[in-house]
Length: 55
Image (cartoon, rainbow, N blue to C red; front, side, top):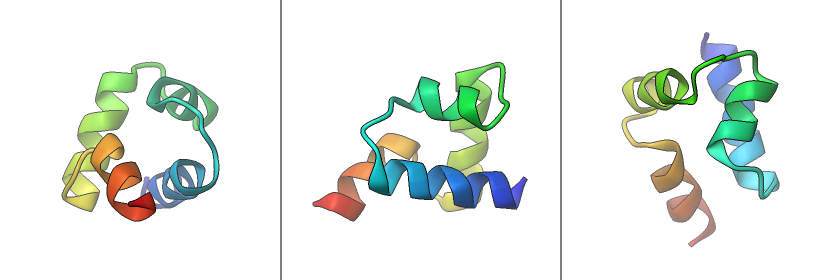
């Protein structure tokens, strides 16, 4: 799971893909589950991560 979250960080940093596209690419059928898992492991939502890393 941690590896998938690390890959999602790369996608968030280097692509303009939506959270739904990223979750699908990583094999999650439910983007909301992916978002909750990301938030639990990273301490912030995927959208917040993307905004803070670029901004």
